[in-house]
Amino acid sequence: MTSCGGVFTVFTMSDQREKILSCACELYLNDGLDGFSMRKLARSVGVTAPALYRHYESKEHVLIDVVREAYREFTGFLYRALEGRTPEERLAKAGDGYIEFGLRHPRWYRIVFTAADRLGLDELPADVEAQGCAIHQFWVDRLRECMDAGLLRRGDPAAIGMTIWAHSHGLITLYHNGHFQTDEEGFCSLCDASWQRLLEGVATDEYIGDLKRRDFASVTAGST
Image (cartoon, rainbow, N blue to C red; front, side, top):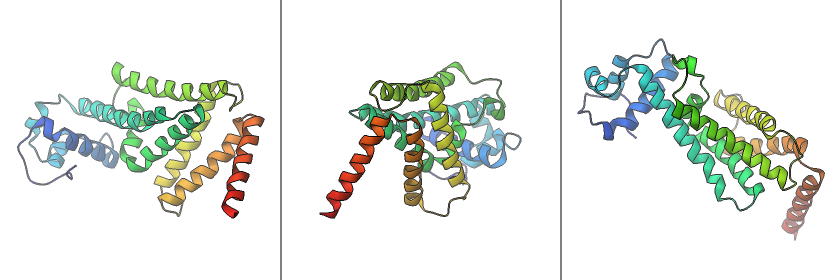
């Protein structure tokens, strides 16, 4: 991906789309909706404003595409969890994907969780809303299958998912804002420990016992 700004270049949508969306995301996050304009965006991308208008009718249409791209990236990180062989593995991989997305793509992460009205929109288009609903259902499915497998206590998976999301989102936001004086590796270790404490509140007694036996086995194996 090329950086924003620079001299004016020939505008080819297929070649420049990634740069347009990246620059639009950065411009919005830096200047807010009031400071976002097609002219500023064209200058950042390195094209003329009329060239940009040939492909986007307004800044709202650009921002909608930014949200689409953010959701596309987010979905890719999450859905790798489906490679897991068991409900436990799939839930763990989903959590890892969430954290990794937040670390690798902090700008897309912020856009995913920006309300429509903050983007100057009454509502998001149906296809974008569908992406959000699919991600929500993905988490509900991961939690429900862990309940069915006896790993988590029975309850409303959507409500439990809200708690887990709030927990993870809070950690990532605090990290992005510089509240944890640690590097990414240290932050990931912090997340793992925090997740274990949260898990103890929703896991079945049998699963907690199994986790403790595994920890004991790993410690004893490492000491031999």
